[in-house]
Length: 149
Image 1 (tube, rainbow, N blue to C red):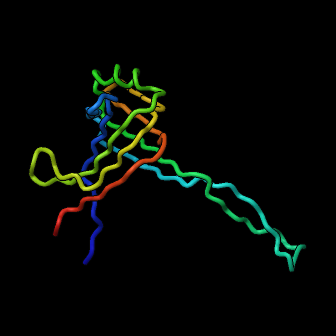
Image 2 (image 1 turned 90 degrees about the vertical axis):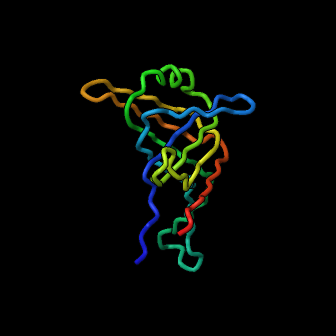
Image 3 (image 1 turned 120 degrees about the vertical axis):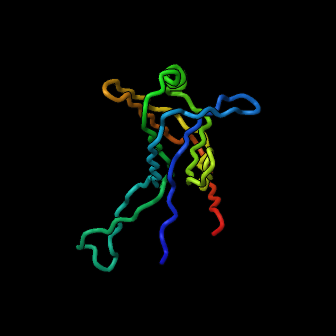
């Protein structure tokens, strides 16, 4: 039987722009949605041998983008960090990991690159909530380091 390799948790960290760069975990962000998109332009071409029939779409890739939404509990000290970073490009690191009976867990996949923090939402009530959205700002890298069986 073959089962999918799944992540048990995600850690989102924001860089500070220093050299060397220091990354700070966005505490409370426990759910992560990663959306990879190939942007396209459509054009339509007719069959030269049958010009009276509808044209067929041809799709041309014009770019690639990644959007990441992280959500979870609001960490009040992070509100100032979100306000300062809103609308600015920064380096971020998103680590997907598995539980392995250590406090850190085992990182099995990492996304790293420059992203623009495009939204930072929070809610207060029975449970304080937070959600941030990151839009890729250039090239990103993805590395997978699966544990040996």
